[in-house]
Image (cartoon, rainbow, N blue to C red; front, top):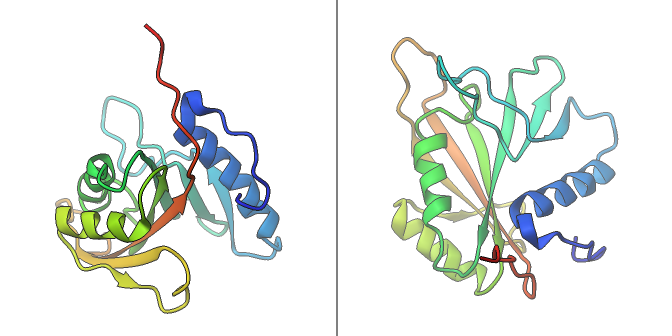
Length: 181
């Protein structure tokens, strides 16, 4: 996205960036992967009796069993300190098995508008709390992982051990448009 510098709709910044990101992921795929990427898929496994199922921002969906999705949840981070919504999704969605019930991993994307990824990682680690480790294959990227034990709902056999990937993408100079009164 840095190379292309596509036009971003700042009225709906998170969805706009995620939609643009999905296209660029598809361009990098060979077509031989055992999965495909999808913007906005629903997680029907954890759907409440009444209401809409959870919806991921992005997911890598397994061709052999489309119920199995490796989700990515995105959040716009206005500053490096503004991680509350991000942390809430880790705790209330991933660690409660509402997101990624069949997977032992998932990811959070932070679209950072101001500040440094290092500051973001420090704030996330303090607020979850967790230890964020560099990913051995991506040391040059703003990519960390954390390990957790999830709360498994009664009667379910979901993976209890969970690794969360944290990816911070910098979008300096991009601003969210505030609704006018």
